[in-house]
Amino acid sequence: MAKAAGDAKWGSDREKKMITRPAPREWWEHRTRELTAGAAETAGGKLASKMADAGLSDDLIALAVELRRDYAAEARTPRYLDAGDAARLRRRVHSEVVSLRARFVSGQIDLDPPGFHAFCLGRMDDINAERGPATEDHAAFLKGCMYDIADRCLLRFTGRPP
Figure: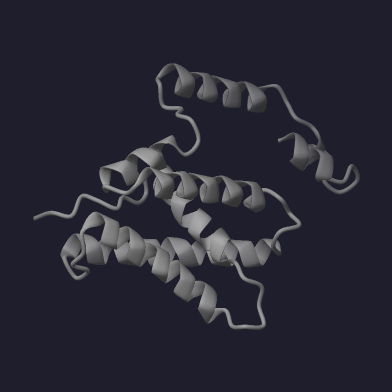
């Protein structure tokens, strides 16, 4: 809220310059409810438990959590990627993840959880390679985005019905 207000121009966006009491109060109340209900967990905690459930090793989990943290930092740094390019990459990862998960759950991808995890990582490498040799390597950004999706409970590497 403060950044948006600071970025707004006084002459043309006067209303955006002002933060009224209800907006931060609503945010504060929501965040307090979330914390007291136990919904908040250490960043990467859900990702780590999902990967452990999939039978993945501790070192692989630690690397995934690190990639997710790097992604989060990079995604919030405007200098890393053009905003449009970053948004396109995120949408591409979301689209790929939903397709992979649907294929895994339906049995079209017949792998155990560690194999499915490796397959997902491979798809992120494929997406990066599709961008062509003239573009900057964004494999870590793509994988970090995938792990961020898993950390937000939108992707699991287990749970395929029998």
